[in-house]
Each structure stands twice: as C-alpha cells, then as structure tokens.
Figure 1: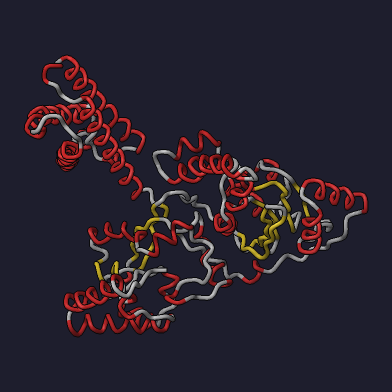
Figure 2 (figure 1 turned 90 degrees about the vertical axis):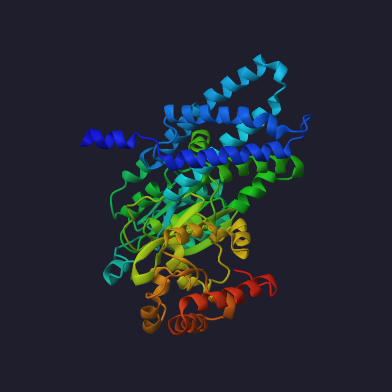
Length: 510
C-alpha cells in the first residue's frame, strides 16, 4: 500500500501539463505578435517548429518531474526541477538554430520566448507557494488573571554613588544626556532592581537569574539582533509580571535620513540599493533565503509597528516611547508569557482568520498592507486609537505607504478571488470579520450573519455608513433583503449601486 501511494505521488499531474501547454502557446503567439519580423508570415513559419519544440518541452518536463504535485515538494525543489526541465530543450533548440542557418530562424525570438516562458512558470510556482505559506495573522489575547497583571512587590534601594556615576557616564557617552534623563525619570535607572546591558546575544540574557530584576534596559539597537523574538522572549522570562523592558531601535524613516545624509544624489542611490536588499527581498519566497545569506539577519529595516508587534508577541505591552538622537526608545511591560508559535512574518500574502457561514472559521487571503507583526497590536490599537469612519482605526501607523495605495483601490483584496473560487465567499456580501470585530456586533446581527456567506464587495460601499452602528444597520438591511427578496436579486441590485459609487462618486476604501 505504501509503495503504491509513493508511486501515485510520483506521477505527473495532467492539469499541470495542460496549464503549462496553454501558457507556452499563449506566450508564443504573444511574442510573435510583438516582435518585428522580416518575414511577413511569422506565425506560419514558426508554428510547426514551435509545436515540435512544445512536445520536447513537455517530455523533458515529465522526465525531470516538473509536473509532480507541488504540495509534495518544497519551493526550492520545485524551482530547481523547473530550471532543469526547461534548460535542456532550450540548449538543444539553440544548437539546432545555429546548425540550420538556412532556415533563418530568429535567435532573438527564441531566447526572448524561452526567457518569458520560464519567468512565468517560476512566478506561478512562487505565487502557489505564497498562498500556502501566507502569514496567518493572529490577534493577541491578553491574559485576564489580575494577580499576574499586578507587579510583584519587591524591596528596592538606590545603588551607591560609584555605581550611579559609572552608569550615568556610560549612558551619556554612548547615547547622550537626554536618554539619561528619560531613563532616570521613567525606568527607575538607579534602583537596585534595574539591570543595564548593551548586548545583542541571547546568551547574555539567559545568564540573568529569573525575576531578580524588575527592569531590564538594553542600550543596543534591536535592528542588530539576529533572533529578535527569542531575544525579547528570553527577557520576558527573566522578569516578573509587571516587570519592564526598555529597548531601542532605528525606525525606517530614521534609517532613510541616515543613509541619504547630506549627499542627495549618492545618498539616494545607496538608499535605493538598501530598499531592494533589505525591504524587497525579504518579502518574496524566491529571494528571502538570499537576503538572510547576505545580511545574516542583522541591521534589519524595522518599523515601529513591527518592533511593537514583536514585543506584544513576546508577552509585553507598550507603555511609553520617545525619539532620542535618531533612535526610538520604548518601555514595555510584561503582561503574559511569550507566544510559542513562530509566525512567518515577511510574506506579501496574509491569511486572515475570519468568521464565515455557519460560524465556521476560514482563511481570507489579502496582499499585505501593514508592517509585519501588526496583527499582534490589535488590542493595543483598541486601547490607544479610536475608530474612524467605516470602522477603521484613526491614524493607523501600522499601514505601509504602498498599503494605503492598495487599500484605496481595493488591490489588496484581489487574492480574495481565491476564496470565491473555493466557495467560502461570494462577490457581494457582508464583510468577513475577525472574531474580535465580530464580537462587537449585536447578538441579533451575529446570528443573522452566520446564515450567509461573506462577500468581496460589502454593502458598506452602497450605503456609505460612518459609524459602527450605521455599519451594522447597513448590513442588517442587506441581509433582510436577501431573506425577503432572494440573494441573487439583492446582490445584483447592490452590485449596480456599488459600481456606480466607485466609478462616478469616487468612493474609495480606507
């Protein structure tokens, strides 16, 4: 039985072969149409050799196992198999063109066609794995144990004058007088229960006795720490509940100002290079390993949302922050133990858990519009930011510049088409909500909602409500119409209104 199963898994999938053949034909006719040929009938000239080439293309694809089920392989093996399978027919075809000069086949056409076809194949493979590797955005749920949330009572005393002088001079020398004042006034710098360190190594934290200190201050930038989550989680386990961690990091905008400096032209070139290596490469599965090989995970580009989100993931909540000398300092308070499931944090696709029909949970796919780890700041945002029109947070610093553009034109929701194909969403319907947002709705509307599939285009864009109560009223009106007049007619009517609002009234998402 096991042998039969392994044999079945090693068979090529016919759907992959058919899709690959259709892509090859589409690219062929596209390139023939775009390139200027001296021959007036290039389609007739190249069609017969193309289909001969396509046969060998598929033959070598089967031989090198390019068409095996992608779920049974890693991205690295799938791309490697694709390059092997495509490389041999390419080389053979190139040799034949050179050996048959009288046929006057275009080498430019052949190379361009092959390059585009391979690029499309690898892109499709990458997108497939991106959906399966999409980061599952999780909302951090804070422990409700009041005893844990209260700081442990400990007897503190001031350090002696010699230690105080040494600490003061060290901080002023390395970080400046302003930081010294901030730590003295907000972090109990000179108390015996405060530990001052300057390290990037988790090993140095592990040597500290558990709960010996109520505050740990690290003067080294988080950007240089190889395993940020493990480092901060180790600090968490060395602190009592209510204990505090003080850290610092260089934000994205601060990094930009430092790199560009006073030389605008040369600085912009350096910044463009930095953006490609440190901001573009980590987000794509084909370049992520190369990024970590180049940088060793150090000197990372970090946003405030990511650092605060990592702190929340590691069991802290942010209580204070201040920018000093082009660095951002923060004070985080321990409220629970660190989470143990390490998320994939840089994928450009997110898998958001949403409440669907029948109250079942399903994953909604979206392009990332927020900085990594932003989902762990959901509770922090509820406590510190009010809701804006449309039920979104005011001045949400978690959203990227590109993310605001994608949201404005709904481009971030294009991957939801996969949910429509799967059948857990439809084109028009109530917005798919997280469990936390769903809990804000009235019980009556919650019960009514779970009898219907959520949709890509919510009634919000037809009625344009401004407050949470108005959003609920808008959705209830839509659901009542579905139950009285039928889902198809209601969706059709709402779709017309939504399209008119988008095209003519310039309604945009936030």
